[in-house]
Image (tube, rainbow, N blue to C red):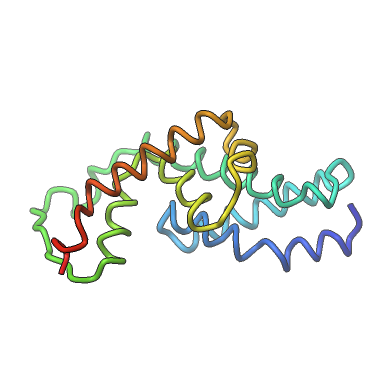
Length: 161
C-alpha cells in the first residue's frame, strides 16, 4: 500500500469506523482512540495490506480492539461509581428511534455488532464474517436472533403511538 492509498483509506473509512465503534462503545473518546489505533496498525502493516482489502482490515482491527476494551472494562470493578447504587426508574418514550436505540443497547455484544454492521453500515454477510471472525451461518443466526429480539422488544407499532 502506498502513502496515497493510505491517505485515501483515512478519507473513505474513518467516519464509518468511528460511527460503528461509537454505536457499540457509547464513548466518543474511546471510539476515536480505537479508530486511531486501527490506522496505526494499518500504517505498521501497510506493506502487507492490499488497498483493495483495506476496508475489511480496518473494520476487523477496530472490531477486535473494541472487543478487547469491552472485555477489559468488564474486569474492572464499578463499585467506585456512585451511580451504581442509585435507584433507576423507567421513562416512557414516544420516540421510536429512542426505543430502538435502547433495544439495541440491550442486545448481547456479538448480536449488537452484527446487526449494526448489517443494518446500519450495509455490509454483506461475508464481509461481516470476515470482520468478526465468525462464519456466515453464525452471522445469519446472530442477525436473525437480534431482529427477533428487537421485534419483540418494540412490539407492534400501534403500541408505541
